[in-house]
Amino acid sequence: MPSQALIHLFVYGTLTDPERVTALTGKQFDRVDATLSGFERVDSPLGYPFILPRPSDIVRGVLLLNIDPDSLLQLDAYEAEGDLYRRQVVEVEIADMRVAAMTYVGHGIRTSGERMTADWTGPPHYELLSEASTPLRRLRAPFAEEH
Image 1 (spheres, helix red, strand yellow):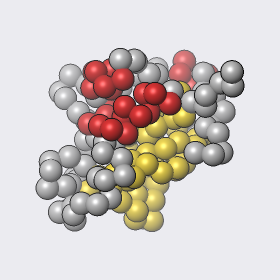
Image 2 (cartoon, rainbow, N blue to C red; image 1 turned 90 degrees about the vertical axis):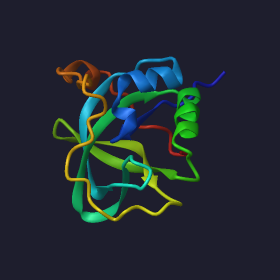
Image 3 (spheres, rainbow, N blue to C red; image 1 turned 180 degrees about the vertical axis):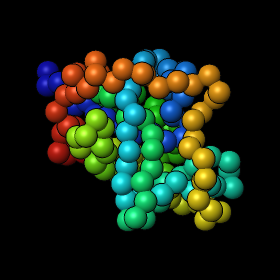
Image 4 (cartoon, one colour; image 1 turned 45 degrees about the vertical axis):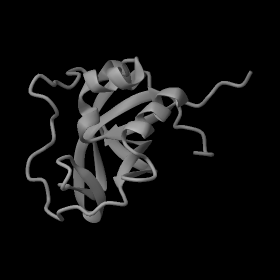
């Protein structure tokens, strides 16, 4: 049986909360700070952020590493992929290197058009993994080309 490709997922809003990701997928994923160039984070009338293309901007977020296909489907359902968001291929920067990933880009809803002035950090107890070197050593090849 062929192995299923694992992907990396750049998140910048509610999915930066590790407890939320675990509640949705039943799994914990390694994570590292990351930035995404060419997009801006904007507020929505629904109270959570979207990203939209904007060549001169950068979005700070978290890269979830090695997401399996079943977990990705759970996250797609949560994000209303295809309705509120579209998942697309991007390149993010972590520790001075660029990595292929996927992210959810706003779609199908009007945003307020106002930039979010503060980083979205999730619940007050949220903390990023402080030592990124361990997960970085475990980075696998980017997801399969068919994605």
